[in-house]
Amino acid sequence: MNRRQLMTKLRQILLRRRDALRRSLSGELRRFNAWEEPTVGDLADDALDTDYGAVNSQLAQAESRELASIETALTMMQEGSYGKCDECGQDIPPARLQALPYATHCVNCQRTSESRERSTPAMDWSRLRNSDSSEDLRLDSYEFIS
Ligand SMILES: [Zn+2]
Image 1: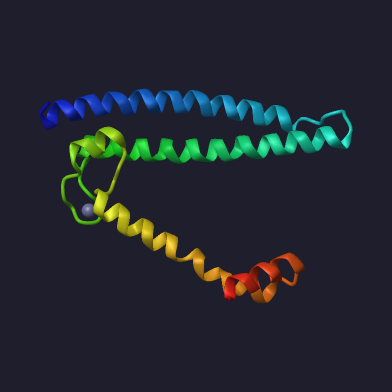
Image 2 (image 1 turned 60 degrees about the vertical axis):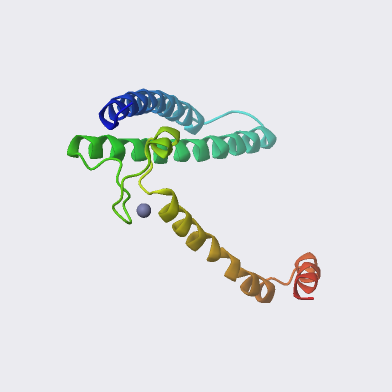
């Protein structure tokens, strides 16, 4: 398969996935609206509804993000800039594009940015230890120090 055939194939995959996400998201939104209507019931039912809604809204957020990535990829295809790494400008290998059609970084640059993101939250340990006085956390922290 040459690169042009690959693009055609990936474009079809992206369009299908975009349609599926759009259908799913419009379904989610309909259900959200239903939840906002005043409900008659006891407090336990309300809490259950809220938990359920939160899980669904996280799912919807993930789907929205994926949809945005797909829209970007489709725009880049039209502009002819699709399949190039945002960071280093090199062609993203076909195998990676087939695995992740809306990839915007080559494997190397993706790995670099992921390790950058991972190194940040680790710093919060010392702050947690000082600010939170709960017994459990202090016990954990002593173990962490020693
Ligand atoms: Zn790169």
